[in-house]
Structure formats: structure tokens, C-alpha cells
Image (cartoon, rainbow, N blue to C red; front, side, top):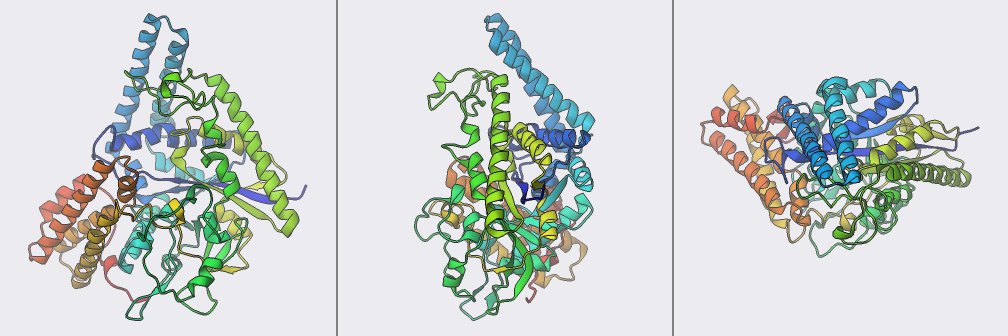
Length: 560
């Protein structure tokens, strides 16, 4: 039977740098939870399928700052402490529920004892405490395409200096090469945020992001649906931006009307136009956009799978152990939630996997019938949605992969494999866009978070000046400026304005933001005063052990 199309999950895994930066409810336990609930289960699913001889394929973005943390021995030790603590809590619940005469909750507590024992055993024995090595082996076996990102998930369209964009990308590429032994083909732009070229008031042109990607040898990135289809944002990006924040006045090289009205389809890749040129040249960089229809089967609060009444409730936790013993039940108060039944949830996983696979076939068949082309569905999600927020989500991914791998009509693949087999034959001009609220920059630049961008831009300019002034630095100056560059990268993380905007961890985000700013300023000041403080740089390195091979000269001005 001839193929009608292709499919890939594109999962974006990211946790902000939280090593030794607090514990519950904010800080390093973010990462422990993600390892226990998302990364380990995902590895188990992919290895199990591969060992069964099932040709599962998946595209996975690991941000460089997450990769640095997953490789850190201190994080490994703390994770073992975390997972053993969770197991002990479950064991205490077993005794408590038995004393209360509640056999169902006792059974659920035993379920958690076994789960955390398995997580610990697989982390230590199956993967040798080396999750990055486990992901690398899957890539080498052809199961995964691993995708890089900007170093600390910096929000690239709102960075004011080209040197900062280059620094974020170059560190991302260098970190990928160090951990995975090859050059990345694809990149996940943080928050799917893209900016075309525009003209500054002095007439000079700031290149579009596609130019920077090409300079670093990156060939493919992922965009939000409306960036390619045109029109209003849909799905998770739908909403109305409020006020002028995040909307920097641009004088586009290609008229904005052309940018805004560009039309394409999410079923095909496109070469991205060189938006710093008025002629129709392309950058050699391709874009694939998120398929909204399949996306909403997971993202939708109204009819997405995770809201099924039989899946585990995320928000209600036991008052003593913090474990979750309830199911969604319905749109009822937390106090009215029914107890969780794992076997009911397992049955729904199979039903929803089959429904999703049928939908993929229907959509690809429709596109193939209309176009005669082998279309691609890229189902793009935050990785931590699966397993952490949606407890059964990784089991659902496993079930979907198992079914699609057996399909005669759908090619289960990776983003790179598809683009290499079906290279773009059209050029598209992309608008300024993201997958944030309203499809623009408002989520990261709004009345709550706008104040953060002034210090970021001042720090960018300061780093650029010092890098240019000290291209041939002595050893002390080099070490101090390298650490200043690390603090600048951490300062630029999109997580800090995001958390301020959402209010989820506002105080924590401000504390982290100001901490990196103060460290950056202290290091720069020591160099500017002619007394580079190596001891201070070493002290900060012990706090923020990331990107050991960066070079402060990457932040010096380079002419496009």
C-alpha cells in the first residue's frame, strides 16, 4: 500500500537552570520531577519499543541548559535522594491506609512504591545515571533525532544585540556537539519565537533569525501554526495581546504586509526567505510548523485527552505524602474528586491512542488526496506535558508509536529524515511570531515583565564592549569574562519573564533574575577596574557550572 504521508512527534524538553537553586516548591525539584515523570519513562518507552524490534521514531529537543543539568553528578545524587524519598513516602502511606482500613488507597500506595523503585533501578542500572548517554545511543540507533536550542532558552526576538543571538546559538551548537558527538541539523527556537530582518533608524539592517541559524550550520527550525498558515493565531497561541508591549516598531526590509499575508501549509516544509534582502533569495534554512488539529487533541482544555475523567488528577495531592491518589472525575471541586483507578486509565490510553492514529491517517489522506504530496504532520508539544502534567501521557505516546510503526500508509519518522527525503520546493516569508499568547511577544514583554528587558539590554551592550576590548585577554581576564558570559546567558532565560507573567513563581523568578544580573555586573566591574576577580569567577562557576567551553570573544561584534 503506498504511503500517504509522514508523522513525527516533536517534543521540546526544557527546565530552567535550577542546580542548587532552591528545593520544593521551586528550584531543583522541578528537574527531579521531570526526570522521574517524563525523561525516564520516555527513555523506557523508546528502549522497550526498540528492543522489541518496533521501528519507533521521535524528534526530541533537549535545551543545552537542561543537558548540562542532566550531566551533572550533583543533580544525579540529588535525584536519587528525591526518588528514594518519594518511595519512602509511598511506603508510609501503605501503612497509614492499611491502618485506616482503606484497601483501595493502600493498593495505590503500593503502586507508587513499585513505580519509584522502578525509576530508581532504571536510572542507576539500566542507564548508569547517564541519561544523555541513553538519549545519544537512541539517536545513533536511528530511533531519535535530537534537536538543539538556544543555550538558556533566551527569547531571541527581544534580544537587542546580534552578538547575544549569536552567543545563545553558538553555545547551543557547541554544547550539542560536546554531548552528542555530531553537529545538530535542527533547532527548536525558544517559545517558537521568530523575527524577520528589519531596518534600524540609522539605515543598517538587523538580519532575521534565519541568517544566524545559517551561520551556525543549522538547517531546520520549528514554527507556530499561524506563522506558516497566516491569519490569526490558533490552538495554544490563540488569545488577544494586550497593549503595545513586546511589539517593537520594525521597519521591515520586506514590507510587513507581505510578511503578514504569507500563506502556507503545516503539511510541508519551506525554505525561509532571506528577509534581510528585498529579492526572493532563501536562506537554506527550512521551517516546519506545528499541526494544530492533532495538537489540540492534547492541548485543548475542553476536549483534549488529558482532561478525560479517568486520568489522574494533577492538582489534588495527599496532605501528608504529597502523592496523587485521585482522578479527574469531572468539572468538580478538588474535594469531590473520586479515587484513581490505574486500570481504567490504561484502557483510556489505548482508546485515545487509536483515536489519534485514526486522526493522523484521516488528515494525511485528505492532504494527499488534495495535493498529491507526501505531507508531514509535526505534532509539537512541551515534553514535560507527558508524564508530569498528564500522568499517562508517556504511555499514550508509546501506544501511538506502536500503532504508527505498524502502519503501511504513514511513515513514522523524524523531522530531519522527512526534510532530507522531501526537501522544500517553495520559499516562504515568515512573520514575527511565537507560540505565546496572541502569537506574539506579549507573554514575555508586558506590564508585569517589561522592566526586565532594560537590564538585559544594558548587560548585552556591556558584554559586547568588553568582549571587543579584550579579544586578546590574559588568562585572568579570559576566565572572568567567560563567567560573565555564562551569567549573561542565564540572565537571558525566557523562563524568568514567563514566570513573572504567569505568577506561578514570581518571587523566585525575580530572585533568580536579579542574582544573575548582580553576578554579571560584579564580574564586569572587576575587569573594567583592571582587577579581574578570578576568585569571584570561580565562586560563581561552582554555583553555575554550565557551558565550560564557551568563549567570551563570541560576543564581540561581527559584521554580517
